[in-house]
Length: 319
Image (cartoon, rainbow, N blue to C red; front, side, top):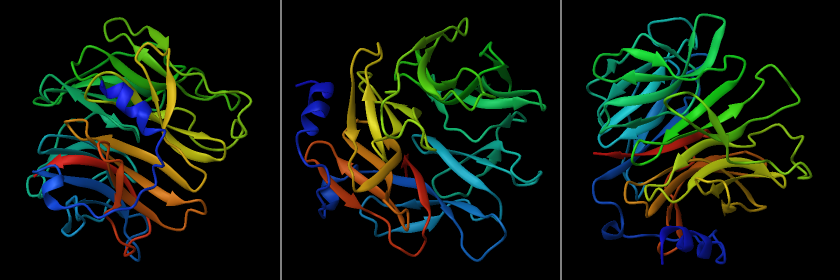
C-alpha cells in the first residue's frame, strides 16, 4: 500500500484516539519545536520552545523578549523569524541549533510572517518577503550561507505566503491570493514555476461551504509530504479548521484531520513521513496544544501541558 492509499484509509478510522506511546515507538533523535505566547512578560513576547516527543522534556530555545516564531527546521538546524534588534514586528531570518546556543542572523532581507522551506540539502531557502513598503508578500530565494537573495515571483499585486518545496526541490507550492487588496477573494494553493514564476492552481475552495464567508484560512500553510505523493494544508471548512490533502496535480483532495470537535491547524511531517505533529484547540479556542500522530497506528498523543495557553506551529527538529 502506498503512502497516499494509507492516508486515505486513515480517514475511515476515528482520528481522535488518545494514547500513551512508548519511547521505542518514537522517532529516535527527534524533538518538536513550537511557538508560545509568553504570559505576563513584555507587551508581545513570543518564544520558541522544544519538547521531546513523549512530552517529558521541555525547554526554551530562543529565550528572548522579542517576537520569535519558528516555521521550519532542517535536520538539526532550526530557523525562526524575529524582530530582535530592530523595529517592532520587523522580521528577519535567524538560524540556531536545537539547544538555542548558536543563533545567527541569516540575511538582511525583511520577511513576512509566513512558513518557509529549503532545498539542496539546506543550502537554499524559499521565503515570503518584502522590499520596502510597496513590494510585499513576494517569493524570494535566500542563499543560507551568504544571505544573498533574489525575487522569483512576478506578480506584485498578488500575495504569496507559506511556500514549500517538494522533497526533490524541483517543485514549489504556496498560498496565493491573486488580488491582495481585495476583501472578496481568498487564497488558494498553486504550484509555482521557479524559473518563470508562472502559476498552476491546485485547490478550489467550495463556494457553498458554510465557512466560505468565515474569517480564517481557506488554503494555507502547505507542507509537502516526504513521499512527494501529496501536499497537506490548512483550511477552515464546515465551521472547523482542519488539515487537508491534495495531490500535486490537483486531481484529488481529501480531509486528513478534520472533525466537529477541534480546530487542527499548523503542522509538520517527520522526515520519514510516518509522524504528523500539529496544533489543536477546542472549538472555543480556550487552550492550544501540540499533538503527535503516528500514521501507522493512528494514535494521537498530546505532548504539551496547560502551563501556557497559546502553543502553535510545531516543526520536527533533530537533536
